Image (tube, rainbow, N blue to C red):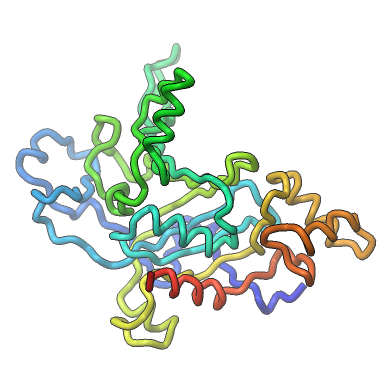
Length: 298
């Protein structure tokens, strides 16, 4: 197992700040007097993307921790530095590159928000998740399909090419209710509706100025805008049968006399397989960033 090729990050310490990330200080962002009068002090104000809001925009890149939650030993994850102005359409392409997918299946971004429920018998109020937004490449087709099947999702479906990351992370409200805390927002990316690979997207904070220059060796103004900072885990195999199939495939390559059929399929037929076989820990950070650089030029 060539551990020298691994790129590790510590996701266990929630208070850590990878590579000098500065957490978004939403409490310091100003509200207009009208907003302030209608928003309690307990609510955290987040910057609006409305053109009428003249609050200076923090243009530093987001640091996003993205993890394929159905994987383990290792859990496949990446830390990405991306501009707030990046559209979800481009973000989808970046995720395909970072996780080694082949973009051969459907995908969707979903945003969930925690809403307080009615009090139970003991007077406790629980926070229940509710989907408030979906973003994909063909929202009109999605809505037509839902209508044909008589499905009322109860949330909006929008065009991922017209929405940016800051539209999601810096709006004042979702689902008609003010955002109490950014921790109440849960952004997911699902790829391949059959295998249902779910990727959790967490906003760690902002990238410090000079981070890209330090990692690429180029002046900040010439450094690529989308960058993979770190991560762990070999890309999952396409069409392997979700988490159970992925585990079986790893077991096959863990033994010299492992399942020869599975090994042969991965080496010769799998869309993102490798002739040399599978090492679950091996992945190439430099190759990922080279491909991400090409993405930003398009």
